[in-house]
Image 1 (cartoon, helix red, strand yellow):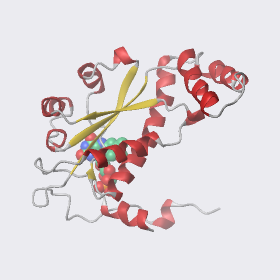
Image 2 (cartoon, protein in one colour):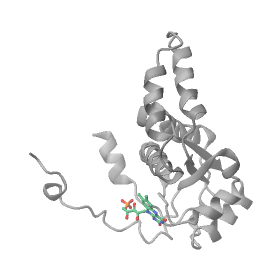
Image 3 (cartoon, protein in one colour):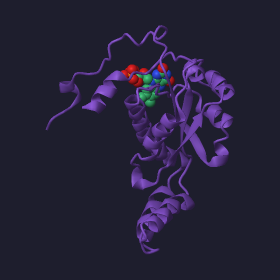
Length: 210
Ligand SMILES: Cc1cc2nc3c(=O)[nH]c(=O)nc-3n(C[C@H](O)[C@H](O)[C@H](O)COP(=O)(O)O)c2cc1C
């Protein structure tokens, strides 16, 4: 019930108070929610970049179709996913799981071979379509965690991902940007969306009971 209240409270904030900053402790919690997200085969195919540097946030405005949100927000989280699957990437998380759980070294060999047979024969574009979907799961949980902390957040796809990749040098890390999540505190007077009713399709239309 508390979660639903938080989700009703939140909205895609359009104007932030540039003078109010989110504490490091709260930023960490919002990132942690993404780290704890479930992902396909548990591979955590995405990373989160936490931008508080004002110069970089200012540069994000031009990349984001002039949306001032990214400059005024306290922090901007960038969710970036693997640009493709590789043998090393698939092996890496299962090596960690094997070690952390004290399992026999070959415990996941059959399973990872099956994953490799599927993903390594796909194109990088097909791979990225899959890895990016995992980023959305973490993104959703970060939004919910922010709301629980009464921190505003704006889900954002409205930016030039190629330019953002360049700015953050994501290619060298084998990543591509998927989403941005500015977080901070709303400008109570200046945000046109704040007084507006939240609109969703009626429950009867949205959920189909079979
Ligand atoms: C994936 C995604 C991308 C979005 N991109 C933008 C964006 O670039 N700029 C923006 O102002 N809002 C953006 N939004 C916000 C949506 O318009 C908003 O979530 C939706 O209208 C529902 O309203 P609410 O979030 O206030 O409840 C995005 C939302 C999602 C989930």
